[in-house]
Image 1 (cartoon, helix red, strand yellow):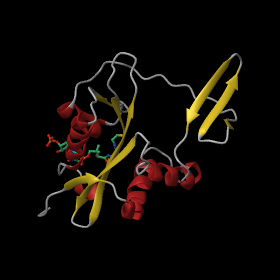
Image 2 (spheres, protein in one colour; image 1 turned 135 degrees about the vertical axis):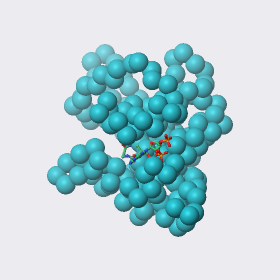
Image 3 (tube, helix red, strand yellow; image 1 turned 90 degrees about the vertical axis):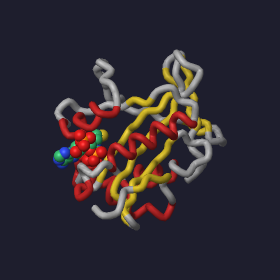
Length: 183
Ligand SMILES: CC(C)(COP(=O)(O)OP(=O)(O)OC[C@H]1O[C@@H](n2cnc3c(N)ncnc32)[C@H](O)[C@@H]1OP(=O)(O)O)[C@@H](O)C(=O)NCCC(=O)NCCS
């Protein structure tokens, strides 16, 4: 590559190129064809990157006019810190630039962005068989030693109360969820 890769915040005009990278990333995780992630989820996810009150962000790696990498991250609360914590949810680079530093540059820029937002930590997870990604991650962060447990849940109907606060009553408990501004 004679031109360096640059990192910047995503823009609305990036949608079609972002979608191609996003579909490729989803396919990498087996979400393609009959198990593809529905387009309305992708559309809402993309819209959330631009929502003022959404804690969901995206950076892109560019090579000239071409998008060659994406990274999505979220900021969330912590019970052991007053500052927010950053979760790096997705990282993907185009096959033709792999090994050229785009992945590392995206992670470095997330570190800078999260620090600016007051975060004290960035963390993420990786499947133990993804040795290519682990090779990169071993350079840029420390292994936490924690194992991730997960349990899929059947979703119940959230009631909308006229604003963008949704409520769910389940047993004795009531939960509230503030949704994004309408997209
Ligand atoms: C994991 C991934 C994001 C890495 O992105 P990348 O742009 O290749 O990252 P970098 O170029 O910064 O490479 C990081 C290191 O891995 C090495 N590397 C990455 N891909 C390589 C390849 N195909 N062959 C040889 N070395 C490779 C680089 O040489 C570099 O090593 P170095 O720091 O010792 O020089 C990319 O491979 C990818 O998108 N994979 C599919 C999706 C995925 O697994 N995402 C991560 C899990 S969520």
